[in-house]
Length: 392
Ligand SMILES: [Mg+2]
Image 1 (cartoon, rainbow, N blue to C red):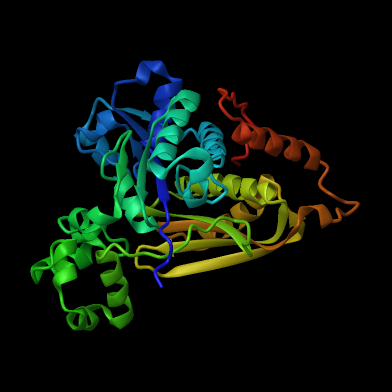
Image 2 (tube, helix red, strand yellow; image 1 turned 45 degrees about the vertical axis):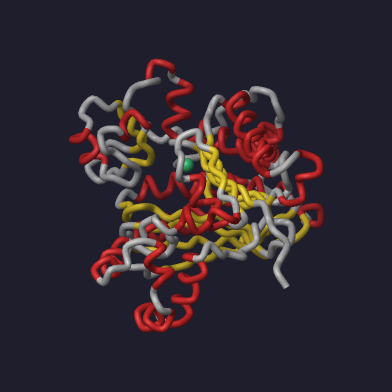
């Protein structure tokens, strides 16, 4: 029995960090901007579209980007502005469906299958959502509309910036076949190069390759996975947090990031988003797990148990940062992926706070509420206030 058709959106903000900076500093509009640190080992977090013309892109060493575009203006990662804008973006997305799966601070999957009756078809929803983000936040998003997550993500990337790309079920193969192998998640540059040598250059080539041969190269399981994707099939659900046993966030970098401070900045943003999701669902977490992956795919996880369950961003950050710093000071290696997960969830209302509860707790709660409110604002230009400096 065929599953009923789904309508999935992938929303990806355009050059998010750079766009925020150019929005807030009009003198930088139309000029090449590189977001990131300016140290010898710094990496570009985001290049504005004006800088991309010169070949600069995210994950590139800053020194290399500066050689390509000496006139670029370098701006440090605007952490607080990103956290506010990200909360605002997710606040908007959640008005179109409760089924929102965050991928990073500026990227999410939405299942809008159930929203059609109230809000219109998937393309109408994509259009509304883009225009609301633009008028409310003065930022642009690219949106892919497709029957599944794999195709929706692929689509959002096809017409950046400010794109709206629809892959109708009957056009799937026509769109997929000419694309390079590297468009399939999990097929890295090394694997693409190897496949290319034996004539498998495009997704169409892959689709024509006998299953048995692919099985010899990749192992049967991975081969089956690749064949499904090459045929545009992906039945992964959009995983929102309602039934979750844990709530987490992770990000893969394009290169190994050598600057611990930059990795930490990403970890802080992840804590902010995980905290917001805990509060939204009325749950508190007692375990915080940090995941770190190196370039060779070796992965470590380190967990901490909190004295009592919490839904405060600051508590998550305190625990996550302690884990990260302990690891970084003892055995730092360039990082390919960083992630944080909150687990052992209990309803927040049932948490008994001890007599020795954090005296700052109310202040921290107020700050979280402020950011959550900003996230929940609808159709108004929300104004963020800077929180206390949480970087140590
Ligand atoms: Mg983006």
